[in-house]
Amino acid sequence: MEVLEFLFRAAELIAAIVGIIYIRKYRVDILIRYFVYFLCLNFLIELFGKLPYLIDKTESLSFLKNTFLARNAWLYNIYTVLGYLFYITFFKLHLFSKGFRNILNILSIIFFISSLLNLLLTDVFFKIHSFFPMIIGTLTLLISVFFYFFEMLKSEKILKFNKDLVFYIAVGALVFHLCAPPLFIFTSYYSNLISAEFVKIRMIILYSAIIFMYTCYTIGFVICIPQKKLYQKNKSY
Image (tube, rainbow, N blue to C red; front, side, top):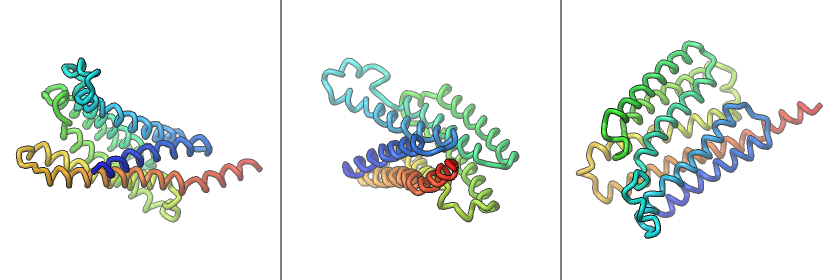
């Protein structure tokens, strides 16, 4: 399990570093830049999320045990909502259809308001990682990815899909968000039935999905580099 966690952290960091190199060396649009910044934020959030563990294990930080920093549920609840909104907006802005964009605008508003009410009107915010935003967010994200793939199939982009960075982002995000939410939901509903074996399997699936997602992002940056490089050479003439 320690090996998988290390690989997960490494895959996350590598994706962020390769992304930074990508946007610094090649001409890319603002959406890809924001995506790379989002990857960097992911890494920082994961590091900050380890703070409760450090507080519990480090004597010098024991004075924080009775503060909100001793738990990270609030951090991941906020991050879940913002993360889904980012992904949905990212794919929405890569759509050509005004109708698809309008649908995602409405769904995003519904998702944000319902998630906000869930976190404010219940007692989950500081206690547990709420599964409600995951359900609504995942459904909305799946719709946005479906719209993107649908438009790709109907356009000439399908002929060069392997050179489209957004395609790799869509595949990685799709696989992860299909795997992760059911694990959290099952844990929330059946916590009294969870065994050590389930916890181990859950972490293996979760870490594997995360590694796959960040690997897709890294592969996308690497494969799309020659295309950007050629673009720059042509601009120099």
